[in-house]
Length: 41
Image (cartoon, rainbow, N blue to C red; front, side):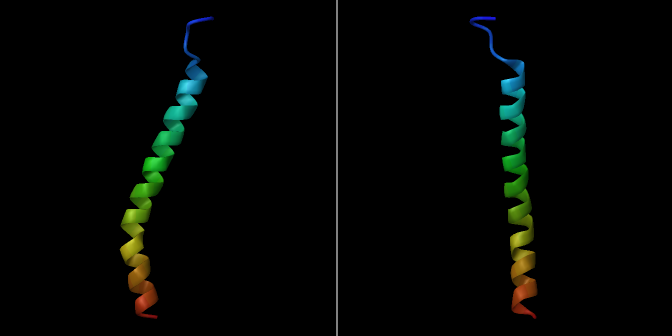
């Protein structure tokens, strides 16, 4: 096991990266929409 990478650690790191990118995309998509709703309330 020494010298090998832990696949679970790589999987967790990859999923955290994907979730971060997904959250950034949602923020970029919904920020103008939320600003539009707040301005026209």
